[in-house]
Length: 474
View (tube, rainbow, N blue to C red):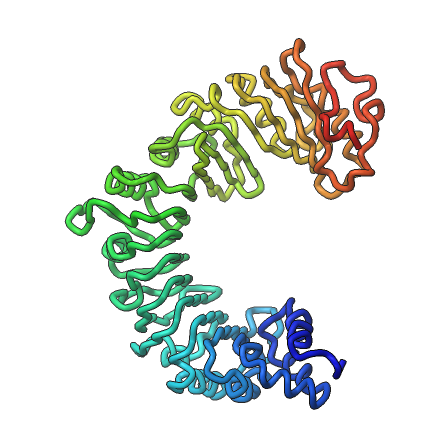
């Protein structure tokens, strides 16, 4: 190995550290193999710029790694985990040790070249973080900042100047001063379970100021957006993704204001809204949210439902994506009611062309389609997780009415062996136009040589089912 050119040895170093590019101990072990490896490693300055401080050993080695990194931009992660309830400790750093780490990073030679900083801790919060993030210091090269608390909201109040910041993700923190924390350069901003003394003013500052913002997540309790004095006519003109978390008190109120002040702009490409709901039936608030969620969208052509995540994902005919998450502590599923509402108010029963579902939702869609069949649906993709009887609770298996179906794709959830048996049980419960041939595709199930012949897959079933051209050629 000592005969390898340095360029090739550097590639070896990168491959060895590929799974954990910030492990200080791994890098030092490589540098100690022999004198040649050490010389190459020390000359490869950027090899030392990605750093994680998690253990006592990491903290002790930090000055060495900083020295090896030269004057290159730094990518630093501070992951300080402390005992939580019954969980064992992972060698937590003492207050003096975290202070030593922070002091090392605050030296101007290091602070001025920090490009990315990731901070995560579990309670109690290290007091030294106030010196790093709450003292009003300037980080002129910082482009990416993530600050995450855990367990409960903590008392760190970020206060720092980051004129070139492009990405800011913070959770479980209080955002009181944002004049310097929210620069116009931001392209991505995510506030998760955060608090603000004046959430409406913070939101207005973000959307008015951040002209370059493309990805925005807002999960802050915001009781009112009725004042229009703080809002400009066009908000976040480059925005492509918007996520509203469950802390938002009224998603409908938010979307109404948002849509009103962006009426002259291209609609946001991807919007996700989380709604908290209690009770067996969708209330007026959820129906209103759906109305604003689909504001300025085209025909709804693609639908995916994940009951386990309580998520409804819909795409329109120009590719815009809308996601609705109904958060319900009782685990109530609203698929039939969603379908009824979307059909009545948005005509999805006449525009939907493709549906991706799981066997978990079979009886829910069976019931929904029995009332209002999808008259334009031609492609159906079914993720097979269990036998249909597993989800019908000893009731007769529902029939899925898809009049214009042209193709049905089956995807196994891990077990390919049961795929043929289960698809043969499912196909008789799909009702479609008997005069048309319907393609059956199983090519997504894995290796090509595994796909059986048509007689094995579809033998004995209705003649309307036929393997798709791709599967038939294997």
